Image 1 (cartoon, one colour):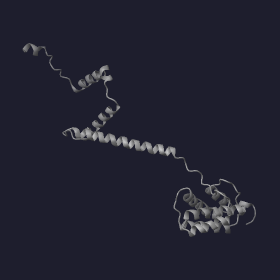
Image 2 (cartoon, helix red, strand yellow; image 1 turned 180 degrees about the vertical axis):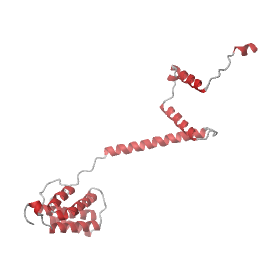
Image 3 (cartoon, helix red, strand yellow; image 1 turned 30 degrees about the vertical axis):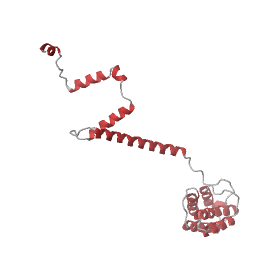
Image 4 (cartoon, helix red, strand yellow; image 1 turned 120 degrees about the vertical axis):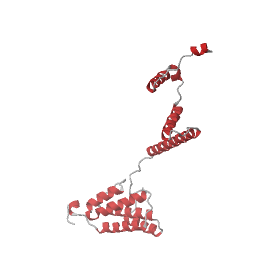
Length: 218
């Protein structure tokens, strides 16, 4: 027995740094490289190490910690999937088209006003607001303050007509925003919006082009 014990090499007393270097060299061998864990296993190991760093040193790192690591990984995966889906959805959804004032058959300003009144009586505020603004633009076209141009947007109409009628330029821009919000932004519209557009229509009808915009006296 003594001869057997004498043949066993004595344990080597290594410091912490020496032991770490020895371990790194050993694990860099081809046998260990080929046996390295996959990406999922490395992720679990990394998460487990981070969790252990947050726990007291005297706490037993048993199955509860492993369960916590798996739960954390599941949460991270779900968050990543949700964020990815939102980004993809934003990329797929095109920007809204320009808000054209007119669509469908051509109507006179009086026709638009009559339709607005009828829709207002029914409580259809989005429809009434849209028709009210269309009456403003069509009336300006009939007075040759605007040329009849297909595809004109509400903001374009407000800018062009506001240049011809400066006193109501600010109200025209505000009216165009209400039109866009209701028709293309899915805003609910209201009786107040309809009344605002009605006042705008009256103000534009009562206004006359300025000297600067026409080159002739008001």
